[in-house]
Image 1 (spheres, helix red, strand yellow):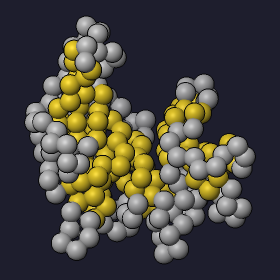
Image 2 (cartoon, one colour; image 1 turned 120 degrees about the vertical axis):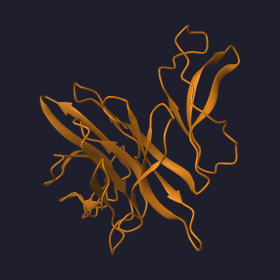
Image 3 (cartoon, helix red, strand yellow; image 1 turned 90 degrees about the vertical axis):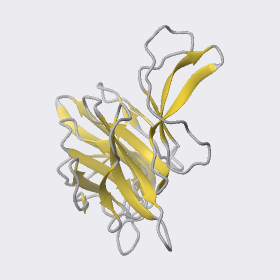
Image 4 (cartoon, one colour; image 1 turned 135 degrees about the vertical axis):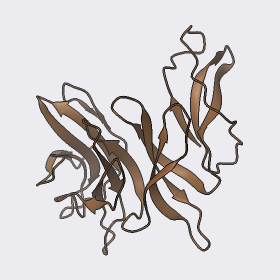
Length: 219
């Protein structure tokens, strides 16, 4: 399942535990879980979101104020599973909200949220007729995702949104559509022409990325 570590440092720390209802059943059926501080043996795990019809969470991100968690996963279907974007209260209460399901989502491997909490960005590595992938965008309230202009064909696999030098920037990992070189790219959240932060060696198959306020990227 999906593990959300809220306020957890080390098992020996005296920080408050974060509780969420329901146990994790260990069968990977789509439980989202919160990790609380446990005893010396390690943290205790409780399900934060449980729906047997939603499985294989791929990635998650909290809202800027930490009130909700947005995540990508698959809903079980009669013939095949359907990719989707879902939302749940960060404290584990309430129902799971489906924000988008099915086309144009294909392989929503990573997700991020804008700094104002209004918009989600999903790295879909197989989006489009040519399966070239794109960053998809949708409102946090839900709706049909659309490709962020300029990101089509980059086969994105990782996303990070950060304010660098006073400007909100979306960083993503993927491959350049023309050269096929793996790299780290940057684009405005409104779209445009991506700039290559670095492409080619030493990158081989970059995926996850995070960016500090100074603009230092870790891939």
